[in-house]
Length: 81
Image (cartoon, rainbow, N blue to C red):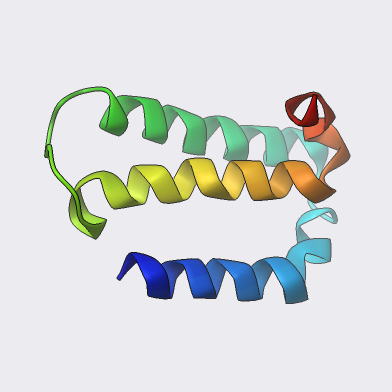
């Protein structure tokens, strides 16, 4: 499941990443903060320990999306350094 999710995220990144930049900065920052909060709350909480999409996979997918967005979003320019 994680592999298929990665393929889907890569497709969205390559074909539709410019649509994300049309959203206001405030909403993009809120989206990134929500995904980061989801990552920290699920990854470090100890709840649903183990591997798999239902356990730590969604949290890892959120942080992966944030780092992909840092590649093209000027709002996240400091993450590249």
